[in-house]
Image (cartoon, rainbow, N blue to C red; front, side, top):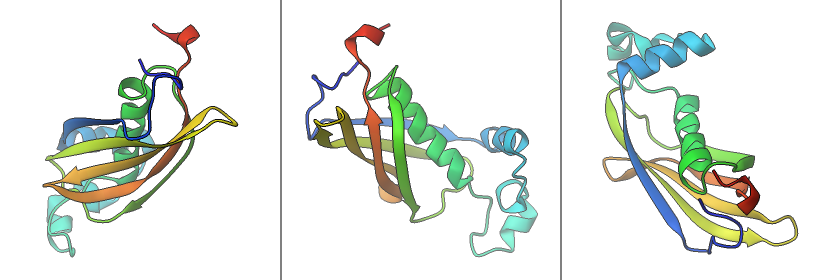
Length: 140
């Protein structure tokens, strides 16, 4: 676990994950977002993407998982998350999430982190998150 005291500007973390058609189906079922661009290969084949793509908000959820479970980890609270979707992520792709500590905000004891999702070495999602990192009292 990382805390405000132990995190330093420049610290980074990466995690890799494959997003399957089943992941996308479950997300669509949970949220009700059954846009055929995500679920129907025949429909998606006729679009500019040529195949089903992962929901953007599902990708943000994976960033949230990394922030809340991996880095900084359990007990982190997101204050803000702002991202741009720069390229589509096809269903059944392997992505890499990267978090880089950009700033420590002493006044509120928050951190600002750059967040990225890479697909084939290129940025698919880019943005930043402001977080309250875990405190030593909340360590598992």
